[in-house]
Image (spheres, rainbow over the protein chains, first blue to last red):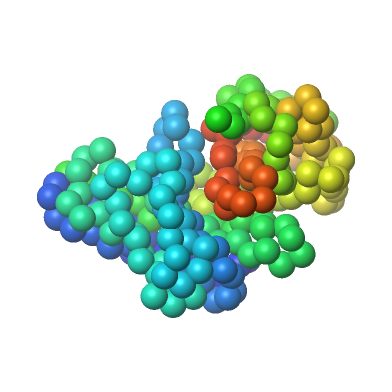
Length: 114
Length: 113
């Protein structure tokens, strides 16, 4: 298994509070991604990073921000959590080695906003 | 805009049956296509990746094919087992220059003992 960890694995928070999720990799992969998975919508990209301090928006980026100060860590922040952000959040990594860009996923964080 | 569809959404088969899962995409200009398995409450596990220049990839009892011109990929599972029960997702990566993957909503497979 690819060395990807996510923390916390479960979190319950109240509406309006800030929340930060962490993704940590030991593979030295260049690209990192944050997705959310919801019934009926599948996996949707929130933000991704193509290098340290290089990030870009995905299709559902409103209400989320990210930071990547070093290769191994990619942080997702909900500035002011809302109930619509209740979801399972997955981090993924990929690398252009061999031109494959194969994606590997972390175990996920289940976030509940009450 | 690229869209990825997986039909059926759910499938039940008896143990031992050979089966095919489908993945359709609307834009044939893709860089690669990846198949994943997801067990309940778990993350996604990569099964096979097919580059745009390839026609198929094999791993054990799994065989994935790619037909870009028709916008289709299939995942063939031979001699299915109850342990194959999971949700199977496909994802396409658009051409070079973008790093975003687009996912289908998956097929939930149940193999009955």
